[in-house]
Length: 271
Image 1 (cartoon, rainbow, N blue to C red):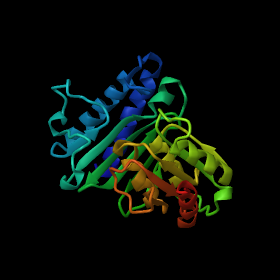
Image 2: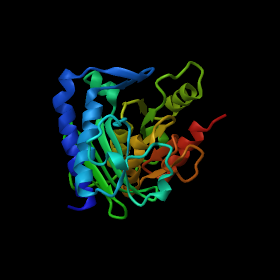
Image 3: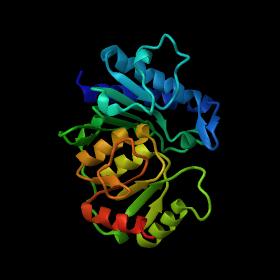
């Protein structure tokens, strides 16, 4: 099994588990307005078990803390979010449930995101949408796909014709920079969305469902897979200040085209 196929298989297995558990979950807060469920943990355990069986010498970085699962395969190879991933030859970055709030409220936008990084750079990606049964995937230099079919972004290069999405912190305050950016973009684009799954937002940019997306408060496991998928579909993605994106950064702008990216950049960086 090649690496992309392995990521796809693990993402689908975990996604099917999430779908089966959705009606019986018991959510709790791990931080204010930040939900976690037993489904998040079960999904991450499923992924770790599948990949570690095939790749026992790789490292793993996941969103959930599994330190109590002493007999879990791969647990001794897990690393923390402060680890310098550029020093690791192979590290799987896992978001077992991206869009937990949507999942808890029975909204249909949630996903499983898996990326393989080599010395800090994504080389394989899979994002699975259990509701639509769509699996987005990519391998470095080999293009991006959905259910095995090549992805092509929208090619839209005018902000006024663009459907844009955003992600920002759950605890946003009135008068904050996040709110100001939202209002400014609302004036300039065709329509604006906050869908609740960073991984799927990036896949939608790659697919053409969205033309652009920006985020100001995400984690590496939210975006590691989606960043590669956007790039392999021909999109543009940078940090919020227009510099090359470092995968552990929490702020970025993604767009179908360079021209659209420039327009988004100008709006989002207004004084």
